[in-house]
Length: 307
Image (cartoon, rainbow, N blue to C red; front, side, top):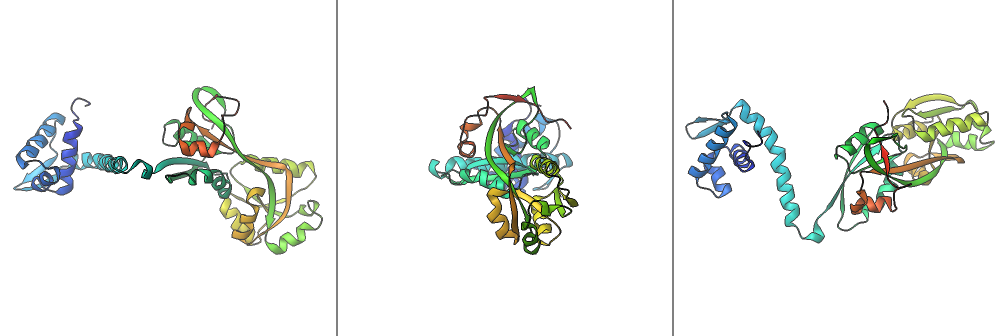
C-alpha cells in the first residue's frame, strides 16, 4: 500500500470530495480540470477501487470513497494547521504542550505546577487530559502526551525509559463547612474522632498517609463517602457532609472557591507531585519551565504500573 498511496493524489481526492466537483477543485488547486481528472483516475487505478460515481458532471463518493475521505479529512486539516504555524513569524508561533494529569491530584495543585509554563512567550497552548496513571503513562509512551503530572512513581523495569522530576510538595490540611470547622478546631485533632470523612476513592498516596496518621494517633473517622473527583469532594464538604483533605499550598483558594474553612494543618502528612517525561523532555521549553531541574537520581527506567 505504501507504493500505491500517493499523498499528492490523496490530497487532490480530498479537495475534489470537499468541493464536490472537478471544476471547483481544479480552481482551488490551480490545475486544469483535465489534469486533475487524470490525476484522480491514476489514484483510483493505483489503489484498485473507485472513489467516485460519476453522474454527468456531478460526483458522488462511493462507500470506499467515504471511508478514504474520513481518513484524509483530519490529515489535511492538520497539514493546514502546520502551514499556518510555519507561515507565522517565529516569535508569534504558539508552543503546544499536551499534559496528562493523574485524576487523584487536586487540580488546583496541578495548576500551580503548570503555571510557570503559562508565563512563557510566545504563549503556550495547553491540551490537558486527566486519567489513571497507568493510562497516562501508556499515552506518554506512545507520544500522545509530552509530560505526565502524577503523585506516584511508576514501577521500575527496562521496557520504557522515562525521566522523573520532583515538583511541588505540600503538607495536608483538613477542611469543612464553616460551622463544622469551628466545632472541630477546638481540641483538634482528637475532635475528629467519629466525624464523617470524605475519602478520595482513587488510592491517592497522600490519602494512605493520612489514614496512617489517624491510626497512629488513635483517631477513628467515619467514612461518609468515597469520591473519585477532587472537586466533588470539596462540594460535598461545603454542603456539610464531612471533613475533607487537600494540600495546604492551595488552602486559601479552596476556602475562597468552596466557602469552607480550614480545620487544621498536618505537617507530618505530605502530598508530593512528580513530572514524568520521555528522555530529553527538557528540550521542550514549557516542560523545562514546569520541571526546572535535572531528573531526580538521573535517568530511571520504568514500566507501566501493574494492573
